[in-house]
Amino acid sequence: MTDGTGPEPLGLCIVANIAPETSQGEGGLEIRKGHRHFVPGAKVWVAPPGWGDGGESVIVAGRHRGNSRRYARIVIRRRFLVNFRVRAVYSPALVRALTAAEPGEEREFGARFLWSPEEAESQARSWNTPKMKAQLDGRHIWTPLVTDPPPMELHLDGVTYYLAHFNANRARYSSEPPPVEPSPRTG
Image (tube, rainbow, N blue to C red; front, side, top):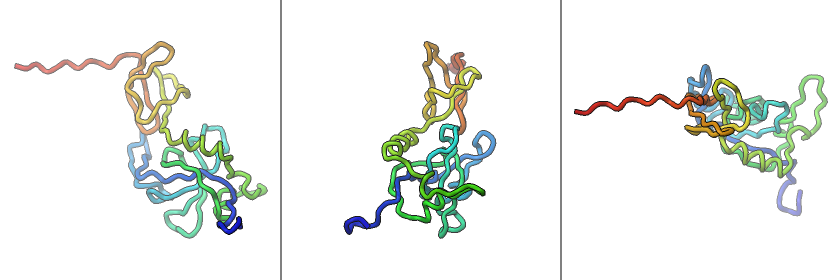
């Protein structure tokens, strides 16, 4: 206990909520309320990214849709999460869920879920700015990513690219301007 103010926090973690609607399936056309494992708006705790996909998939722990008494730990696409913020962790059960060891792996209490205060604030701020992958004239680019929803025009290296198509996963741009529709004749 800290000087009568309550329990000592075990560390910091990024917290988010499950998006009210998530897109699934081919081209993101199947709309689902919440996520398969979590109800819409469910609070989940996000562990630091542990692999090199740029944080598109993250490990989260939260109260499962079917059993709200125990924490479930799953890998989820970050685009299914909203409202990122930093909170202190007080629950040892939550720490165990976030640091669940793989078979044959030694568990280090809290080692894989802790965020430094600066890293957590910076990451939460970055994740609160929606971004998506962009494709320019059929070439994949990873930086700069575009906002979600994407802008109608993108200027890069002196070339103007025009939004041709976008879905839940990426935006496609073309250097060819969009066709001009003829105006209807009046008269």
